[in-house]
Structures are given as structure tokens and as C-alpha cells.
Length: 86
Image 1 (tube, rainbow, N blue to C red):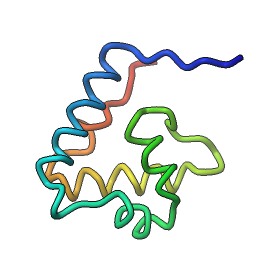
Image 2 (cartoon, one colour):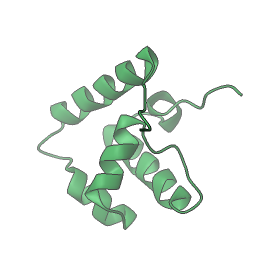
Image 3 (cartoon, rainbow, N blue to C red):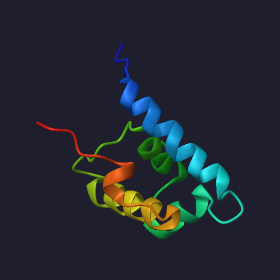
Image 4 (tube, rainbow, N blue to C red):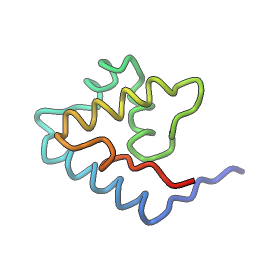
């Protein structure tokens, strides 16, 4: 069984984004972001949780979802979805 373990930083980032979304709940809905990115609500949710980092098949959609979330929340994309050092 493949179990995904999240680091403390991933969990903090997810809670931070969720709290920002809760503050703007009347303005932002995941369905709207999914529609604009031409993706499913499930994929948007997975990107929020950090489960989808940028696979070949969905890479462009994932990048678009991250961009839209950052834009709608008024935060830089790098603050919400930091790139990890190699």
C-alpha cells in the first residue's frame, strides 16, 4: 500500500491556504477555480493538499490551479506553493 506522509511544513501550508480560503469563502469556490483551470474539483483539492506536485499528464493544469489560487487569494504563488530545494 502506498501511503503518502506529509511533512510538518506541508501540513502548515495546507492549513494556511485553507484559512485564507475560509476568509474569502463568499468570493472564492473550488468549483470556480476548477472551471477556470479546466480541471476537476478533485484535482484542485489534491493540489491544495500537496498531493499533486506536477506530473507530466496534469502539469499544465496544476500550474494553472496554483496560479489561480494565488491570484484569487492575493498572495504570491511562491509563498503559497514554495519550491523545495533539490
